[in-house]
Length: 292
Image 1 (cartoon, one colour):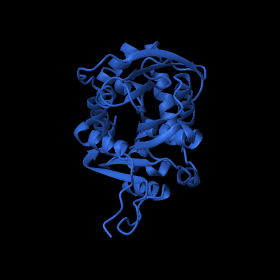
Image 2: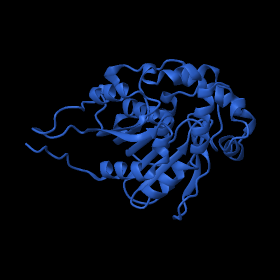
Image 3: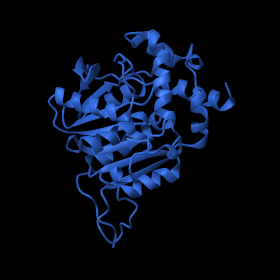
């Protein structure tokens, strides 16, 4: 295992450790039979619905449990565990953002929710983008954190590291222990690692026109030390229609937030920065006009 792999694993382990959840009303839990999967999901709270999509190797537990508890004070939160993650068993198909977007859309239909705001982080951010592309009527406000729409948007160090990543690197880590405690078939972990490695190493270069065609009011969130390059963040922001001068006209309905001193994993580990950014965007109905 090289030095870069060890560093990234250390950060991943910290991020994936089970965080204490705040006291909150109990969530409704269940499984939805959609697209050949039995997707585990939870709902919590009342109000405007928001769907949360977790990242690779993650589950509802940890940072997403805390985020659900916070947002459900004022909203109905829907959260699922994606194919092969958490309590959702794997099936014989690749793990792709397109497949997971279709799964998320099917879950919303199963729950009789016509449309929802959507927040996705990392792999979940790619899924959220595909949800907005493939099922645009189901997405109200779109929040994409630390995700790219093409392979070259990832940092070169990450691209270099991923082909050599092995399941054995995660043995004995809190993340693997959480997986073992939740997964219907814990022995399937090496298969999950290989599928996620394929997701990261097979270039997924979506057409720029797919991104520019997204009509949902959108917020992009990245760390300034993210696994996604800042150049790619700005490229995606401009494709969406953002980055224009807002002093002499209404601001575009696209937003870009760069969190200072924040890594890829750090985006989810700093609720004091993330939550106010989310809540301001979600509660802002009108686009303010600039100063002039």
